[in-house]
Image (tube, rainbow, N blue to C red; front, side, top):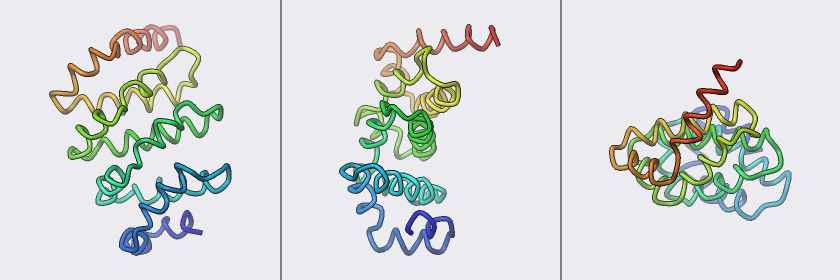
Length: 158
C-alpha cells in the first residue's frame, strides 16, 4: 500500500517523516519477491521528491539497488539503474554513491548483453556521477571508458 500512497506528494512527506524510507530500504534489502518489489516501487515513488534522495542514500538504500542491477529480471535491473540515476541527480549523493560501490555495478550494466534501457539508465547514472570532478578519475580507474565507447558503436549500428 505504501507504493500506492507514495504516488501522492503529501503522502510521500508523511511516509518519510515516519521513517518509512528506512523501513522500505530494510525490506528491499531483506524482503523476498513481492515484498521487495513493492518496496522498490515505493522507494521509486518516494524518490520523485528530491528531498528524499539523501534520506534514501543515508538509509543504505544504494546497496540494494546495486544488487538489483544483477537481477535476472531485466525490468528490475532497469528500475534499479533508473533509481541510481535519479539519486545521483542530487549533488550531495554523488560522492557517497561512488564511495559505496556504484561504479562496478553500473559499468557492468553497460555490457553488450544488457537491454538497451538498462544501458541507457546506467550510462545516465555514470554521466550524472561524473558531474562531481573526483568521480571522473574513479570512473576511468574502474574501467568505465571501454564499455561507454562500445555503446557508441552499438548506437552507430542501430
